[in-house]
Length: 75
Image 1 (cartoon, rainbow, N blue to C red):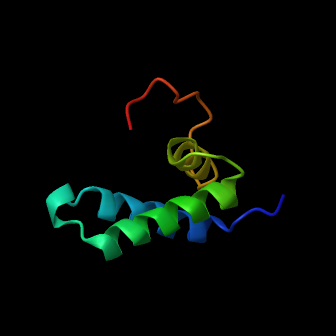
Image 2 (image 1 turned 90 degrees about the vertical axis):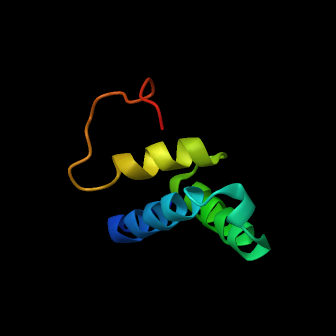
């Protein structure tokens, strides 16, 4: 599997998290579509099938990532 560059992963994570904090009522169709695109890209880049797993996998590939299991941490 090809691995995305850490800078790309970091950018995607930041974009997704920025869009996610918008209240649902402010999220128009374009925002929702962009979130879906970013989620899909993160899943492909990390070899996962859902956004939660993709975010965890992407964070683990960033420089300075912890090696501990963070599955019990809240997202």
